[in-house]
Length: 349
Ligand code: NCD
Image 1 (cartoon, rainbow, N blue to C red):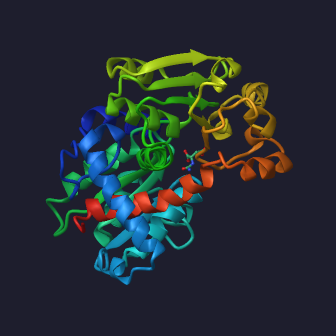
Image 2 (cartoon, rainbow, N blue to C red):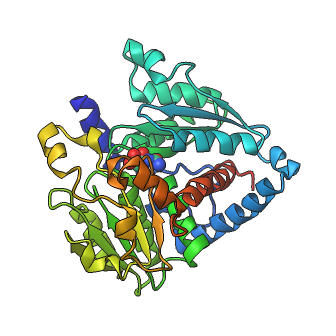
């Protein structure tokens, strides 16, 4: 496992992700750094179009990816990312393949390495959605797929569905789309991210994506236990992109000024030391009482899944009734955004 971790990380340097630069077709999607402001506008136009067509049960959607196959390759648990990508592909008329009982019963069980499993998926599918516990794993997949192209007749692409504690680009795209959808975008907004900012890949990608927008009047507040801060490389990335950054351990300091509150789970599975997790798991709990001090027109986002950081089951039920709770809309938007992403990299729009 240590070897795999070291090997995957190397590809952060060995593989340079191509900028989208106006053309999505055939591009691997491994980091939000590939998107420019205008690429986001192009993608979101497609998302709005797909959303209204899905809502109207427009059958012409089925022709968009009718000749394509997507492979779902998940080495880590997932509900939303996996299901929304699969639903997205099917709503575009495409087909989905995966190892029948999950990767643990594929040749991974026999000791096959990541590169070979990715190559196999690429021989059968046009696009692979990969989730893997190691940082850099999707870069590694992209690197080997580029090499494979000389040996096969097609040019399959990989889309990251989350690289360990690294990035989760498609989640950031759906988070930003939800911000555009409900708040008109990130410009002029105070966006507060709360929880496990060290291990949460969704907040890493979303913060960087907001950095790409370079809106000088956006403020990002990071609220976390002292042991789980936003990584230093992301803070400096934001500063070079002219985003105002405010880090604190005190939610009350920023709650009343926040236009967007992005709550996250403490990533239990990333802790080597159980006691360390237990010590901070209850530091930030979102409840209806906490929301009482939040702006009346703010939105509350969460990538889900949620656990104790969103209170008791009763408190969660009450939160869900708050009109500011945006996480179901966010989840639904995930499918539309992934439809647009799939159709775009497959050159189908
Ligand atoms: C997130 C993830 O897997 O990073 N979930 C998701 O994709 N919606 C967040 C999490 O697991 O806490």
